[in-house]
Image (cartoon, rainbow, N blue to C red; front, side):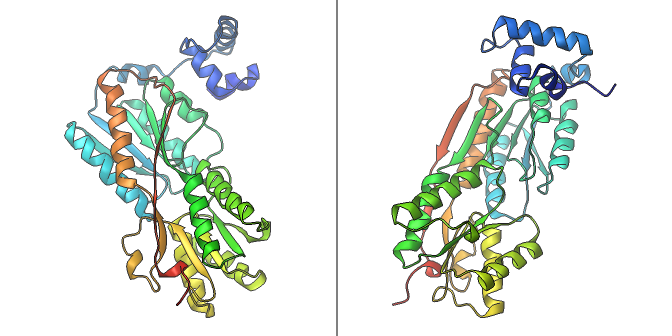
Amino acid sequence: MSKVNLKTLAKELAVSISTVSKALRDSHEIGDETKQQVLAKAKELGYKPNPYASYMRQQKSNTIALIIPEMTNSFFLNVIDGAESVATENDYHLLIYITHEDAQKEKRIINHLQNGRVDGIIMSLSSTVDEYSHLHECIENNIPIIFFDRICHEIETIKITTDDFTSAFIATEHLIKNGCKKIAYLSIAENLSIDNKRMQGYSEALSKHDIEFDKSRIVRCNNDDKFNYKKIKQLFKNIEVDGVFSSIEKFALSTYSVCKDVGINIPNDVKIISFSNIATADFLSPALTTITQPAHEMGVKAASELFKYLDKKRYNIPNENIIIKSTLTVRESSIKKK
């Protein structure tokens, strides 16, 4: 029989992985009857926690991990800078791991870290992950995880995000007030919380101004720049668009490339706005209007919260949502020419 893990137990008992994990940890949130059922099934199937990892958790590595989906996005570089500053203050090392938006690589990294290499993890999910048993097992082995930006609702811990819905609403309304009525939304991934909230803000702003939500103007992008370029080019060819709201900066940059290549003028023909922390936004032609996330502050906050629990040697972190506001910076790419 293959290795029995939390996912196996959850499937056998027809409950969530979170319920199994909490029951095995004797959480007060789970009733005694459910705990007994979980323990009985675990014994029946021969489930055993990782003993080596449990042993190693009794030691201190003076190292924390930061797991990010990519390095090309300036947002994540700023988060690293913030988290590293706090790690240094606490005489800790910071290890950086990149998933490259690959769910399997994310799982391999998490499994790799369960042998005592780190005392805790700060992470942002890859866009392709669709189940979270690897994260539950990590926490069960007493390695706390704190999420930022791309969070996992199934895991009980601290989650640090920006005001994605409100910022997206403000961004879309900004385009509308500057004359746009046919606004496209460049989506990163349907399964990510940030994308859902940003699209909700976009949709709500359209509704407020009596503009119909048109699915044909939703472009599902991914981590492949060539794919994104092709999808955006098809958008302009097939659908009338006078505004583009990009969920992340790399899609906005692809839009600039498409517009340059096909002769679309920004902002006369199409106006563009994007979530972005790119330092060179002012030097693009035209300068890019951005929703700037407090990336450095988010990195500082995530690391600071993690160290609070490491200092107390507490690995089960109560659920808490911390929201830090983003800032709209208006530049030439989204405003009417005088």
